[in-house]
Image 1 (cartoon, rainbow, N blue to C red):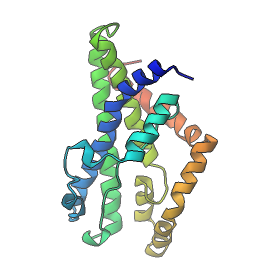
Image 2: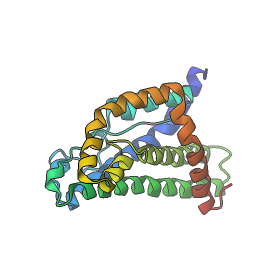
Image 3: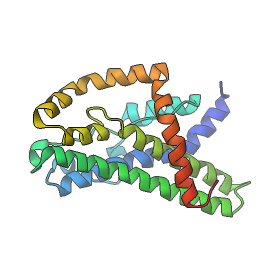
Image 4: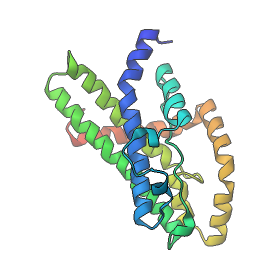
Length: 218
């Protein structure tokens, strides 16, 4: 069990990367929905850069905070984005497009954090400010890739689930989305049994190595 000081230091390093990852994801999702004709997010001020408009007390603060402090596999989510499929010309295709755009934003942010890590390492990153920058950049790469992979899970309500819904025939897609209420229970079981970490671990490690490799970081 980490000491209280170690927990505080770890939380301090991860706080901004987690907040930016979820805020950026939600904002890009809201903007893409707006571009495709849905004004629901705009009416609730979800096009804003203000993190408070996107933060969910449980998914953005409590769950990531506990997992970070305990050294577990960090997952989380922003406040649910209001979307009205009836506002889209092609609802299932639009939902998939919105989801893919949001996940792409996490990949872009992971690359941005990797670039910052490269800069920090170039400064030595052995003492002072650059040590903190290095640790924060590593956390930024990790949380964005974890969040992206988490979102890609082929489950109703997730980005991966919207992609599946866009591919299925209409009748099967309706049944697929109708099972969304069971997802949360399933996720709790997967997290509690360690299956979720085991599933996401290998692709996360491979993707992290790839992103860092783009900037020549071993």
